[in-house]
Amino acid sequence: MKGEILYTTTDYFRPFPNLHDVFADHVEEHAEYLLPAGTLSLSHISSEWSGEIHFLLPIEPVPGFGVPFEKSIPYHNYLCRPNWFGYHLRENKAQLAADFRIFHKAFYAENLPDDRIAKMEFDELPQHYAETREQFKKCAAHFRTHGWLCNLPDRWNPTDKKDFYHRYSLVNNLGGVSHDGNWSNMLNFPLSRYPNVGDNEGDCCLPQTEDGRDFAYIGEIEMWNYIGDTNGILLLFYDPVQQIALSTIDWT
Image (cartoon, rainbow, N blue to C red; front, side, top):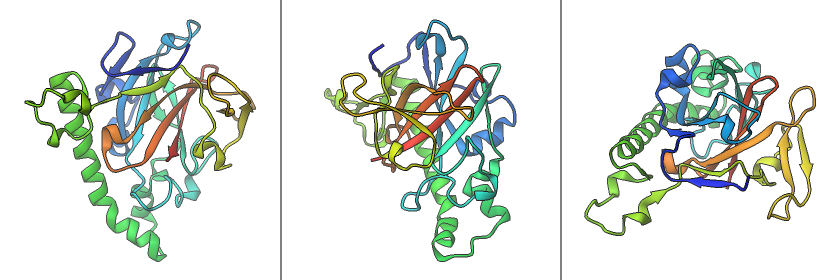
């Protein structure tokens, strides 16, 4: 399948799903740190798969303070480490594969920052969380009203006949190829590289499971389409054997 770009709801992709349809347990705690941007039917990617997978946007990091999960070292594991987080699929719902204290907001609540940069991040976290949530909420409300995603709904003029200039993708490269990028050159997760795959001459890169198999690539989301002030593209991968989803962010 060549990568698809979606701009509206389909029979296999549901934007802005309900929290209780996304998270397996501890729904409010999951939702404190992760924003559900969309739910995909896995059978659309492979006829051998069934069930659903979710595109989850982490509210962290605060812009200018590195990548997610850098400071919360005691709570890292194979799937959850700087710039990577995974979740198990339990009856089609997500269960984070780590303690919630991997997120700096929760980590700092028990481990007050002891260096200047971390203290600055700690001070900015509450406002960042509030603004990110508000932007996501506005984008969701606009989509539910108009059926298309506007990344700056406050600035959209409904009388403007050129509103297509404000229409942004829900998901990109669905079922395509995960090509080499900044995300794959951080060298902080085991990867397989396959040269000259697809239309791009760069390597196809796939993260490896803990036992050395390749995750399958699902697709990506331009995070600024949903939450504004970020330069990140979220990539989503899937292991059908253990039913694990894995995400990383390509910082552009």
